[in-house]
Length: 119
Image (cartoon, helix red, strand yellow):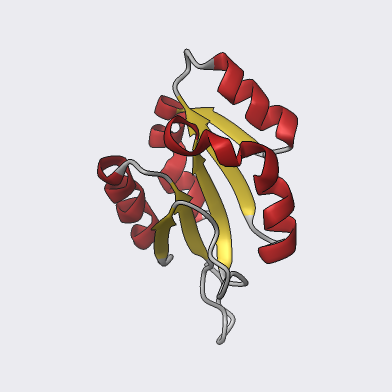
């Protein structure tokens, strides 16, 4: 976290349909001082505060190909993260090919999310 007077950490936008796992991500985000939002797509408004866009490849893989471009338009400073089952190599590969910066297995994301949001 920065010591600038007007600086607050950006929010985490979770694109998922998995309410149970989203609650774990919310705990990590709020522990890092970040607001947490969840939905099926990027919001149309108030996107300039988004620091992380997290894509659940198990429930929202249909967004993979258009997410990078949408983020460039709506939240260009956000870091993109996609995660999914390690056995679903096609979805993981598609996310990497689409240009998503960080592609992780479910276990990797679960283990690293606190450190990611703390940075």
